View 1: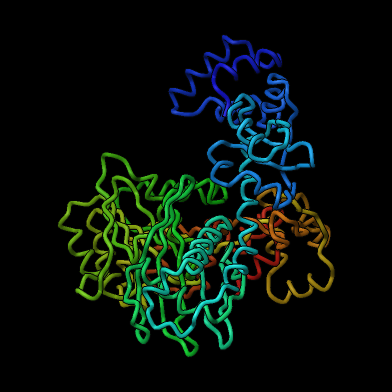
View 2: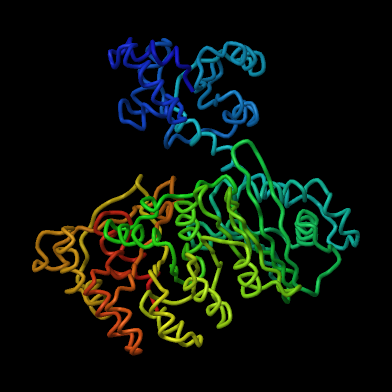
Length: 573
C-alpha cells in the first residue's frame, strides 16, 4: 500500500488533485477511521487500477495487472510463499536471464537483492494493485492439489494400531493441514471426508453445492481420522459412537473455527467439518440483497420496542446470517441483548451469547426462562423447535421484549399456521408477531464470464407448468424492472455464466438471498384470529405489497445477479 506522502506526489503529478485537497481528504478519512488509499477508491475519486498506473509512472516502473494470468509453478515457487505474502512480491514470469516480479512497493531494494542472489537472475520490477496481487497469491494454494496426491502416495502402514503415533506422522499432518488450508482459500463452508470401500472421498461445499475435490487412498484413512480427532480434542480410540468437537486455525489473513462431527458408517468413520470464519464481517441489510420495499418493512419492524421477528427457511438458507445482521443494527450501548444458540456460530461484541447443552438440561426453553430474569431488551433464540420454546418466546414478546428467532417453514405465510400447530393460541400469534422473513440462498453469476440469452420455447413451456408467468411479468412491470409485460417472457434477456477459471467452470461465484417479507398488519391479525387458510393469508400478504420468493428471484435473474435455473433449484417444494 502507498504511503500518504507518495500518494500526495502521485496525485499531484497526474493532475488528479492538488495537495491542499488531498490534506482535507486525509482528515476526513482519519475521522471515519479509514485508510486514505481505500477512501479515495471508495469515494470514486480514482479507480484502484488508475491509481496504481499513475503510481507506476511516478516510480518509473511498468504496471501489470495479474488478473487471469496463470503463473508457471516453477516461477511462482522461486519465491517461497511466506516471503511473497509478507514482502508483497510475486514472481510471474522468468527466462534464463531475468525474473519478472510484481510488487506493491518498488522501493523495497533489499528484497530484490535477496531474490537476485537466490535465483541468480536479474529482477525486473513491475507495480500491481493490491487486489491483483491477492488474486495471484491464491495460485500458491491452487498447486496444493498436486502436493496432496504426492503426500498420499507415501507409504503408510494401514495396520498401525498406535493411532496417536499415526496422527503425528509427517505426511498425515501435512495432508490434513493442506486440506484445511485449501478449504479456507476455496471459500468452502463445509468439508466432508467420506470413507468408501476402496478409497476416501473428500468433498467441499462451495456456494451451497457439494463438490468432490479429491479421492485419497484407503491407507491414509486411520491417520487422517486420528489427526482430526486430536485437533478437536476427541477420543482417538472411540470408533463406534458419534463424537462432536471443535478447533481453530489462525493465520495473518484468516481465523477460522472448525466444528467437527464424526459418525460411524459401514466403511469407517465419516467426518463433516463446518467452517466458521471468525474474521467475517457482519453484513448490512442492503448487502443481503433485499428489495427497497422489503428493506423498509424490516427497518420499520425491528425498530419496534417489543414483538417477534421470525426468519424462516430450510437448513443452510442463511437464516443465522440474517438474524446476526438484524442484531448488529440493534446492538447499541443502550440495550441488553441475550442470545441462546445451538451452536454459537459467530461471536458478537457486547452481545451475551449462550449455548444450549441438552446433556445437562440446558435447552432453548430453560435458557429462555432464565433470560427473562436477566433484564433483557432483545432476545435471540437460535431456533423455535417445540411448543414450550414457542410459548415462552411469544410470552417474552408480549411482555415488552423484542424477540428474534428462526423456524423451519417453506414460506412466510405457512409460518403462521405452523405456530398454531405447535399449540400456540391464535390470539397470541396475532398480537405478538411483527414480521416474518422467508428466504433461500441462490448462487450469483460469475461477473467474469456473464453472458445474456433469451429463453427458448421448451424452457418457457416447462416454466409455465410450474409458475404463474403472467403474474410474475406483471410484478416485474409494476416494480419498473421491465416496460411492457404484454410482450411476454420470450422477449426478455436473461443472464448466465459461461464458465471460466475464476469460477472453476461453474458460471457462479458467491451467493445472495432471495426473500419474502410478511408484515403482520391489523388486517392480517384478523385473518390469523379467525384461523384463515394459507391461501387467504397469502392473498392478503400480496395485497399488502409482499413480493414472493419466486418474484424476488425473477427480479434478480432479470437484473443479471442470478439465473432462472438457480431460482427453480432453491424454490422446489
